[in-house]
Image (cartoon, rainbow, N blue to C red; front, top):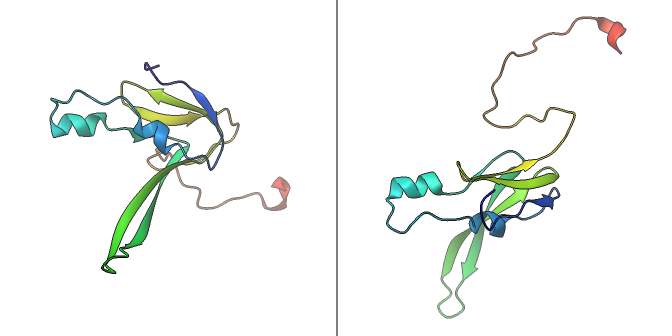
Length: 119
């Protein structure tokens, strides 16, 4: 575990944006490649929601668009941080497989046999 990060229990729908964005940053003398490497990543159990906000200036009635990014929990468990890859993930003990993006596919079921015997 990294210094300053404490594993905590989270529930689906929780907003963990502040926790993830407070992750340790590399030294200020690093290059942009290193910054990208050390920027926080989200793992299983977390998702990014992006919302476009329409802002209106009351003085001159100009309209501007701002983007708000929120990191939300999709399944309950313990929010953990892996320091070597700077990845945040939710660890849970579920007895069922929950697919996620970038999972390896071993095979695709195209047809089932057995009729009424498996009901």
